Length: 109
Length: 228
Image (cartoon, rainbow over all chains, first blue to last red; front, side, top):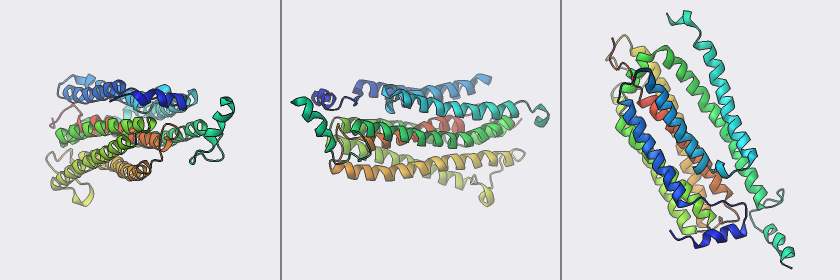
């Protein structure tokens, strides 16, 4: 795609950050590769490691989408605070819940 | 002279709401508001995921057996379909930023087509599950491993609930896309004003992220696929 209007957009509205095609396509291919990787890894028996690897790949994919497709990387600090806050609360939900469930040894039998 | 005319120019934009100073502030407010909404969505899906993990930890064999009932090819293709739709959605926003009406419309249509493709493939999977007796409740008649069948039914309850909530979000997303397309076709969006396209994108990408987690959680659990 030609980019002549790119600079024009910057000129008229300084707050607009136009992400380049290279970044969008790079993120897209990383996400597609991550999908194939998570499928491939799941076919190999790695014992306990299968689950953390699947979680790690999914988390990396999500971070790529949030930073580049959702433009958080070019957002204001206030947006960063809200986004990080959202995942902080999610972390509280999981940590407190599993601090209970994972320590109920007597209930497993 | 030019310093005096520049601020005036912005105040006459037809989509600038009177309670905002300028279009930049309006854009900030709308994307920040969308992130607050997405925070509630993250915690909404997070609550379901938390319950899912409690039972996955409690019944690991049944969870692996339940995931083994899924068709990873359909699930994998659908994951790729959603990622492509996220790319076209991002490019719709980019075209709006650059003031390209045609590009915006093409990318919004493609996003809608990929979204519907996802829903059709999901529907085919649902139909297959129904035929295999994997629809929970009185339709349930799957009994390959009798000892684990009730717990596999619990897994499938999470499967239907989580994929169903996700599909509902997709249907709402396609509806919103039609509205945004209607506005894009009328030339509402350009470099000065593209907030609704950006917010539409935030929603669409969020729904994509939910699926990025649902795919490994519901289709790809490596474990004991057969009892014993």
